[in-house]
Structure formats: C-alpha cells, structure tokens
Image (cartoon, rainbow, N blue to C red):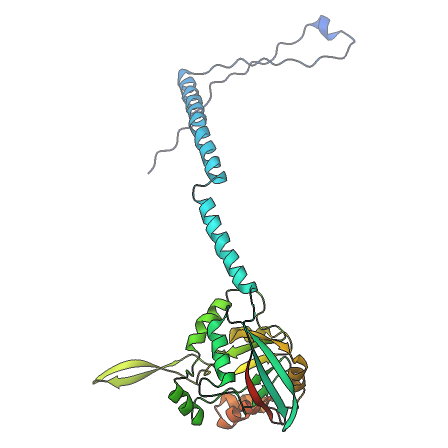
Length: 328
C-alpha cells in the first residue's frame, strides 16, 4: 500500500477588517470602499521553498534567453540552408530549362495517302537536343539508314485525339533487314529519356506533337511460375505480352495527357497539321469494349475477345506513308 499523500496547509492567516466607528458611519457621503489589510505569516520552510523557486526561475530565464536567441538566429540563418537552397534552385532552373527548351534540330517529312489517293505532306521538327535518342531513332527510320523504314507502312489506330502509326515489324523481313544493318529494334534505349522527360510538369503530348511509344501501360505485371533448373526448383518471372519495339509513333490532333504514361515526345508538326486532322476523320472500327458480352468474353479469357480488341479503332481505309525522309 502506498502512503497517503500529505497535504501541506498554508499558515496564511487573514485578519478581518476593523469595523468603522459610529461617527464615520453617520457621514451622509457615499461610503468608501473598505480597505482589507492582509497580514500574511509564512513558515521558514515555505519561505525557503519560495526563495529556491524564485532563484531557479531567475537562473532559467538568464540561461534560456541566450539559447533562445541563438536558436532564433540559427533558424533565421541556418549554416547550410543557403547552399542547399542554391543547389535546389540551380537544379530546378536546369530542369525547367530542359523542359522548356525544345528546339528543333532536324526536319523530316511524311507523304500520306488514303486508299491510294495522296492527301498531303506532314513536316515534323525533331528535338535533337532534348531527346537525342528518340530523334535519332525516328531519323534513321524515315531516312532508311537503319535498314528499315516507315515507307509503305500504315496507320493502325485512329482515336479522337491522336493517330497512331504501326511502325515496323520486329519479325519477318523487317527484322532481318535491321539485323543486317545493325539497326536496333527495342525501346530500352528510349526509356531513360522518357523517365527524364516525365520529371517535367504539365502535359507532354500536346496537340501537334509527335511521340514514340516506349512502353505499354496496359501490359500486366510478370507472373511467377515454378521451374526446374539443374535438378532444383526455382521461381521464374514470366512476361505476359510483348513490349513495343520503339518504332510506333503517334501524332496528336488534340491534347492527349493519357499518352504521357507511355510515349516519348520527340518533335512537333511544323507543317501539314490539316493532313493529320484529315487522317483523324477516317472511319474506323467501332470500339465495343463497353459491351457486356465483350467484358465477359475477356474475363473468361476468350481469345476471340483479344483478337477483336486489337481491331478496335482501326481505319477501314488504308492510310499509308507513301514516302518519307529528312529535309535539308
């Protein structure tokens, strides 16, 4: 059992005020407020405690005051804050400069035909300084130096805000030609530029921009499976679907922020924007992804639903790049 706490009673005695004399009480003027005199008596122990407390309070005020002043000075002028702020300002300035400085260094052209009828030319300015790898990839494909080219290749998807070219195939004749000339079919070298470009704020795929597809945002994550290697069981990651080969490109007719998660902007349309808009008006296969029958078929893994989905938004007419190249 804990001892009951002792309650110290103060030895202060209050003396009641002295009653007024009858003569003073008979004065007709307004009675003055009675003055109360307090006669306080303290014990030695209470005086010692009060003195020690006052001394501690005085010492603490003298000790803490310079500490508080030095802390306030440190908060106002931290030693490394200026240098840190300078570095952050410098990095943000360089980042903003790289985001805003999108100068065109090369020009490329695409001659377009719809069902064999020429509809015009699109002139594209490439960002050779801000996205050198992406601009070099597009230049090698329009000029044919990579052994493969966009010539006689079709636009495969037409959306309300952009048109997409199918690029070159990563198999068959195109792949053999690329191997002979040392051309690279893959988006690995473009991913770094895409990640760096995503550090900039705002929409990248604005109306009139040209971009290369570097990743598939709809691709599911890899699946884990159990395999036998050298007589031991191991877990392997199986990729579902294929990555883009870094040759498909998109021309936006309106602002398309949904493309920022998958496309690397490499240039913009300088001339012939009306041709890109004309491509966007070509009739396409109706998108039926909202149908409940399609949803059920895709949910159960029906291959017919996968094949049908690939055909959504494809143009009924053949939209082909009849000729392409670099301009002086």
